[in-house]
Image (cartoon, rainbow, N blue to C red; front, side, top):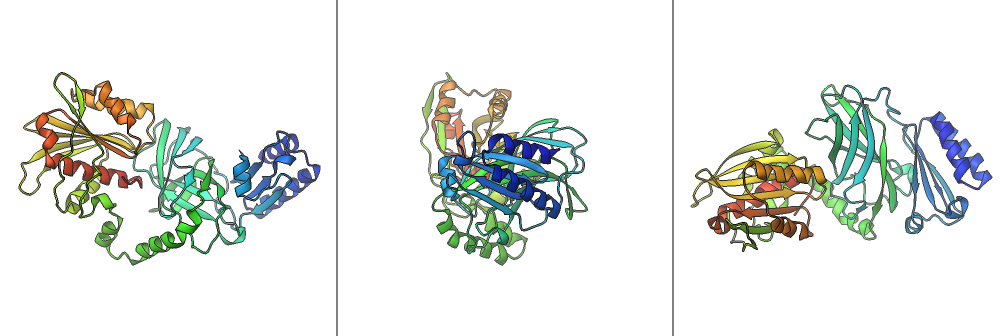
Length: 421
């Protein structure tokens, strides 16, 4: 049925009868061999005068309309037709039984600029059957390399939150591991499927359909990765022992160093609701590694809620409570003697309206205000990810503990999604 639908689309949308015949033959050969394949078609060969990329992946046809710039970056001329097969057999094919329907894929950064940066995507889904207790998502880039016979790339993401009946989930895929000598296409398609995990992770079976989106590499990517990828692979292989690995993964903001400039936005909200930008005090010149690890461990255990006391050298104790209001957003409440002094809003920049509403509700639940003036100041900050601290007591504006601990907590949270301030 899917084969007939693919052939029907080509007959309807492509003008070249020669390509019709070639498409049928190449598709049948790929299906017989059990591999994926791709076709690139120039704009002069389509009825709407647009270039296209057609991917046969996992038993489904994916159709991407290209811009003129994307076609040029792929080397597709107006009369061009290109075809390639995946060098690897389809290791699992179409899912035998799907319990999850993937419906839409949104890339946080459709244009990639750094080889060692995780790929972040939001995937919309519906659970149509019994969801697996343990699951992971795989991203495949089956034709990423110019020399197709040499490379097929993939990466995994394993979210720490359960699936609901319907919604969206943010996926943080590991950085791509590819040799600097492999030439990559500047435009490629990424495919995502959900897998059930069995036998301690050794057995992974697809339980969903696939969704896909186009990715591009910026013009400087190929040059950057010659040095960056080498450094990334060296760091990964040289890390020995759990403690060394953890230290290597700490983002710059969480290592023993000054975090000046990391604290983001600070707003003082007076008792009558007036708002003004708050000056940021000097952060303590203090080794924050132990505190970072404490926050990191707590987030891994329970991203929704945790808290405790913060005791820094020569400073009075402050209490904090973390509330994870969405997968990529949360708020930390800072208190002294049972009274909330400040609240730090943390978000990564991929939140939807529902996530933002949950963030506002968390503040309302603690009976602390978020005036519209303060919210507009937050939205006006172009940087993402962002840490915005709202001060409700004038004394908290000069509290060095808040302004030191809040960025460390934000760094631990951002690191879970591969983001950096």
